[in-house]
Amino acid sequence: MKKGLFTLLTIAFLLSACDTWGVQPQPFPVWTPIPSRTPGVVTATPIIILPTFTETSTPGDIIITPTITETPSPTFTLAPITPSETATLMPIQSISVDILGCNTSIDIIHGMGEVTNAYVTVKNTGTVDLPNTCSLLRALDEDREHPDKRKCVSNLPAQNQVTLKLTVDSAYQQDTVIQVDTTSNEVMLLRVDKSSCTDIGLFGGEPSDIGVIKPIQP
Image 1: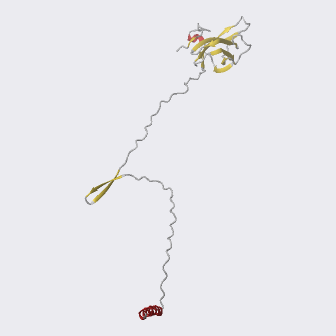
Image 2: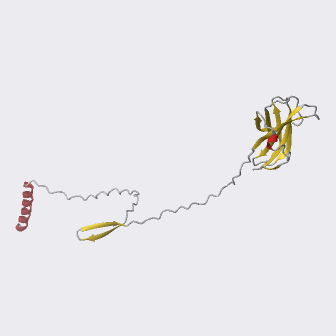
């Protein structure tokens, strides 16, 4: 009994001795869960393909040799150009008129005195025919209108010629200025004149092929 009492007193003494130090036992720490991290945001990142390098090592040096692949350039072939239209030559309308010479005569048939005759060669030097080709003779001293002052051919083909005899009523024994107008379908093509028409007799006389259409003579 005494031994048990002694034990109780010893325990009480020890407990009171602990209080004299004024140190209270620390509470047992309470575990707190660690907050989870905010999940990372994954964004689309472009894939960059870098050139492939082959590394060749030599003592003391590092040589990096790039591997380059050549892409053949496209080959251009020129296709032949086909003309869409065939070039055509435009027709050319061109004439020349030569006054070969003149002479005088007396026209009794038409009741006229002296008349002047002019011998004219009309040449179609173009590439188209000239329909209804006419030449008209005028004189500075012309009196009455002579029926043969204008002569025509129904058609003068290209590169052909014709010689015409034209007549006007003129003053007696006087040199006269003459003029020749040449037309086709009443359209004026050419006008030539001579201040003094040379006597046709000096060139072999009157032409024998008057009114005859033939190829242009060289």
